[in-house]
Length: 512
Ligand code: HEM
Image (cartoon, rainbow, N blue to C red; front, side, top):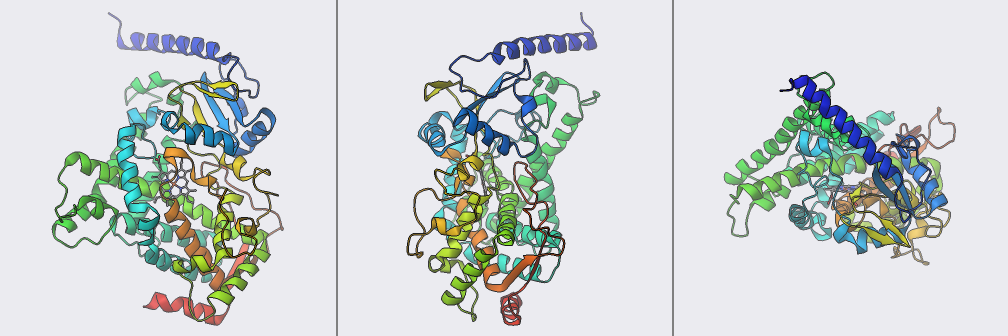
């Protein structure tokens, strides 16, 4: 009988051999595979895909090879969709076969966190989640959270006016966004910047994001490594995965248990979890399977909603630094519509079309999720004479769509007017700058919430603050991180109150 090390060694040799044969075969895809950049044997296009800002390279390829670009990485086919038409055809019209997520070894086998809605590929379970999200976060339900969003964003703007540096602004905006989510999901308000619950959730969700990041773990390519024992040299990823698994269990159990206990004692405030747990007749659901679904659905909302919304607010600040007339125009609209004696609310959105268009332009101009979270095809799909093979990873290039000059004239210009009707009084329909929220059955369920949070910040800021470049600004565009979420690295600006009166008014509601 083989000793363990020799049998293990033979598994490795065999697996590497099979991998090599598979990838060599797949390096030559069928002639119907969509065109793309030339590939090397075995690794395919891996060497051409940069770790940061891949959307820029993909956009060049979309221009050169067409709106569907074919790539191969270690034999895994992927297609990059670079036009509204391709996205509509493949991710929307054919959503039945293009809505699962890639199967990741770290997510499914090691951390066992595939039940998070954003990572999940069990489409029956996914339907349950989407029903919950529609009930709690749909356009009408989301209006119920407006008072929370306005309160938190006023506090964030007030804090920003009292600090000098963009790292402090980030802390304030992050606390506000996380507190909005925790109040909506668990009726828990984060009162301080270093709230222990928010800090813990943020830490855990960063590690969850890492498990799904392309190229982060070798085990995704060499899947046999998942069988390594925990103690084995090189198995650190398994020990890390085990920790993530335990952390995620705590993340979904602990806040949920608090709400459930409060419900039982009649003290629970309405929130996502309490609404889903309480039936119409007031009885609390006692079905372990349904409870498990509610827990995972609640847990994912922090992950999806925080970094993205914070980055969009940072992007607004970058936009008005580079295009200061936009702030002047928004302030003119604000002064003539709202005046100086009250602060704007979310109910004012209809009467502030320029500010509403400004939010759409922030989302379009520099999409904070430039490449949509990948989908996977469950059958071969024809497109314009090509065949997108079953199992292909589908990446919608939201950046290319948002910068498509045939849809958005002079796309690099930040111009909220592009979303306004001729008389400037209403938002136009049609392409609306929402590419950043994804497509088809996976489209972001938090989009109404996100837009309302961004509007709450933008309108309060426009009403109360002014901004200009700081002494260290060279007049150029700030640099961006270029990861899954694309955020500015530094915002070289000074922010100050519009007037002593606006500062007093803003402080007023905080003291109530
Ligand atoms: C500016 C803010 C936001 C942006 C840019 C954004 C973007 C996205 C994108 C691109 C996707 C993937 C869509 C696809 O696969 O086609 C997504 C999914 C998701 N988002 Fe958001 N999001 C934002 C805010 C939020 C908020 C506030 C929440 C909830 C509180 C949220 C919850 C989710 C969830 C749960 C998913 C997974 C949906 C699924 O897989 O079915 N997001 N988001």
